[in-house]
Amino acid sequence: MAMLLVIGSRNRKKREEIREILGDLPLDLCDLTSWPDAPEVVEDGATFAENACKKAVELARYLGQWVLGEDSGLVVPALGGRPGVYSARYAGKQGDDAANNARLLAELASLPDDRRAAYYVCIAALADPTAQVRAVVEGRCHGFITRELRGNGGFGYDPLFLIPEYHRTFGELSPRVKHALSHRARALAQLRPVLLKTIRSSEF
Image (tube, rainbow, N blue to C red):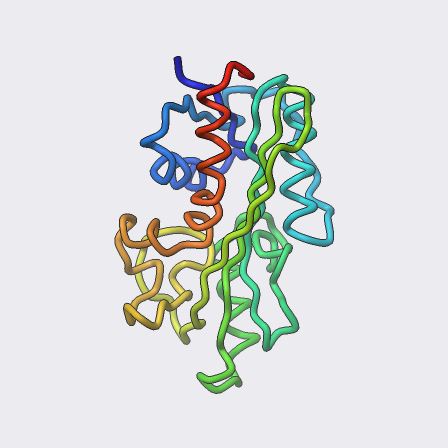
């Protein structure tokens, strides 16, 4: 019997990415599109961890299911840590990748290459059906911001996020390579032992 795990998101691309990373586990992975009446959790936390835990807890309480709450974004030290927790709505509208990328490029336009370092952060929180948080994990991936969009893969800031070792952006790398390197893959790798223990138990 597969364990039902609800991904606390309506982002199709994020759902597919998580499915590809955790697809070898005996999990029935679905997202909030299966529960159209599920609340839209307000991501008003000051940190990625606060937002991830809030999503996991509120949705687990509403659904009575195991929930994976996740918050992720891009941190640029030269911009004082922006866009940070506002990554998905950096230009104002939630999920407008083109506008967000345009704003980031504009803000970095005058900076030399050695000041364009950035890193992706992913915090994943696992809550049980009683809305208790069972695990919180973090993954990071370091790179640089390019001066123009490169590649059509991924989503968010991926076409601007260069992996120096590969000389390519996440937008140019194959999903297989990205999933071996990404912040989300690194966070979920830490969550694997908890998921496996849970799957093997009778708790669900």
